[in-house]
Every structure is written in structure tokens, then in C-alpha cells.
Length: 296
Image (cartoon, rainbow, N blue to C red):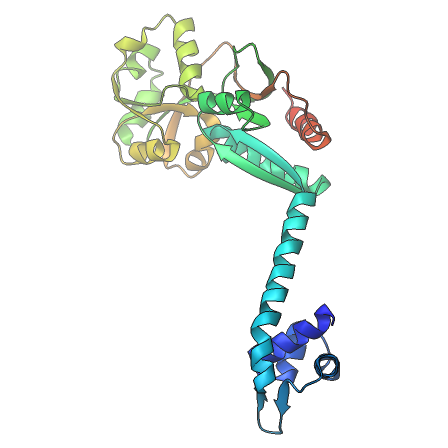
């Protein structure tokens, strides 16, 4: 008894047609008929009742079909499981900006070289991803701030800019046209990212360099969803300080306005891994590719 015989019998049973079964299996009709006939001969009874007008199963055929279906389903499940185990798996963590604006292009180019790779990407803020790297839940992380943990290795790999982002209204066009001071900008109603986000960490560092006390800002809320913040700006709820990557499309379409914050150092994104963890050849390959993908 061969799988091809069982597959032919099951498909003929399900479609009630030799010709349609042949199309589904990419075989000729005589080949499908021969497979069913061989199965009948091996079992020693007729399974399919053939006539010029219709096709039906014999009593023996009806008895056999559920067992054949289970055998074929079990075979397909086993093959799928084996294929998954043979695939090279990357467990990647990424904070908001890398997951939405950096990883998609990076993974696309990496898979051109390694088409069999399977990746599992977890999104969280930079602090969460660092914790998951530390407890071995993830292998490689892409985050928006450098790590200070002794058990984490951190590599800068990509640069971005911080932008003061506002609704595309006449008020903000006039404000930006007269080159306002930082203190004036920060009195506008600000919606900021949540604690432990790389963007908020970068803003903290910038304000410290500018000798600006965070408590003096007109902060009206903290939101842990970047898309929600952008929608709030579009709806004129307030302004924010965001990654240039995250608003480039809306700026290009003229839906938002941006004023550059002149930082002495560009904002950087980092690749992190656990210090004492031995990476697999696949992980080493992806890490090397990622570090060289962008030029600092």
C-alpha cells in the first residue's frame, strides 16, 4: 500500500470524480484510476462503484475512507513538523522603531541570501527586549538605547534623528518659520513615549545636554503606542518628539510638520545579545549581516 494510492482514493472520494481528482493531483485520469485499482487489488475488494453517470463508494470504500484520511493527515503533520525542525530559526526582539522601520528591510535582504531562514520577531520597548535577551527568551535584539547591563553586549548599527513633530496647521507653520527657541517649543502640549522606550531615553539625554529640566515641559500624556501618538498629532491633540524613521511617510505626504532638534550626536540604535551566550552559526551570520547593513 503506497501513499500515492491512498491520496488518489481520498481525492476521488472527496471530489466524486476521477477527472477532477486528476486535476487536483496534477496527474492524468488513467494514472489516478490505476492507483485506485491497485489499492482495490491489494485490499481485495472494490472500493469505488463506477458508472457512466455517477461515482459512489461501496460499503467497503465508505469504511476505509476515514482511516485513509487520518493516515494522510498524520503524514502531512509529520512532514510539516520535520520541515520546521530542519529550518534555521532566529528569535529576534525589536523595540518599536526597529520592528516597524528597520527590520522589515533588513530581513528582506537577509532572506535573499538565506531563503530557508525562519524568524520569530517579538516587539516591546527597549527595556523589555533587553530583559528578554538577558533571560534567554530571545537571541538577538534591536533597541533604541545602549545597554548598561554587564551581561549584555551592545553594538551601534544605525543612526536616526529626533524630530519635533506637529500637526500640519498654519499655527505651526508660522511657529517653525520664525525659528523658535527650544524653550518655546517645549511649552506646546507634549505627548511623549512611555518609560523604558528608546525614544524617551534619547529625549532625556538631549534635554540633559541642553540643560532643560524635564519637569518644566508641558507634558499632557505618555503613550506606549507610537501609532496612537501619530494619530493624536494628526487630530491636533498635541505635539511630540519622535524618531525621524517613524514619521518620514507622513512628512512626505504633508500630513505632519517637523522641526529638527539640533543634537550634538545623532540618535543611535543598537544590536544587543547576551554576553555569555554562544550563538549558533545562523545567529552569528545574521548578527554580522545586520551590523554591516547600515553604515555609521
